[in-house]
Length: 258
Image (tube, rainbow, N blue to C red; front, top):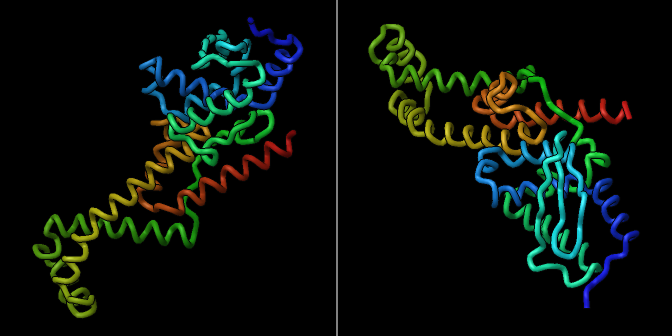
């Protein structure tokens, strides 16, 4: 016996999804395309999610498939239920399962990209298009220390401390008498921590891009993106604090305008 779908229930489901679950549908579509469209894998997940969430809508859902449309030209994608729904009452649990599978497949957590709708969360309306420079005194102090370390490492590798007269004076008058372990200890420590320092700050820059810059619409390769990445490479954690400050300021501005 063929299953029938109540037209009113179907219309209510479509309206509910389009009003309250645009971000969840964006997850479903991005995951589907990551498996079926090789070109989509070249685009970072958050770029796709933010793009889709602003225009996506569900135009059809039945026991066999759902249809999601995005963009001004309304490119539509038919996403099958595998296996098909056994009844119309199963639609909610299967949609939830699709969202869960999408998060796992894309590696996107609820914290990184909350579900729901851009109509019910300000995140989707917040776009960061500016850079906040280091602040005095904490940010500037950390920046000075890290950049200073890189400069010392470069001078050490170039032989400045051992070959130049000024470098020799610094070693004999400052480093040798005051640094624990003297000149040998100073040189050993400077060389030993270089790879860990670069590795940690590179990881922080990558995490900033994944969890902040992409999430809030900072275009990769743009001047603003380069400034934030450079700050993360130099400062680390304080870059996240400043970025979150910018996001919170913009979120409050959006909420006041509503």
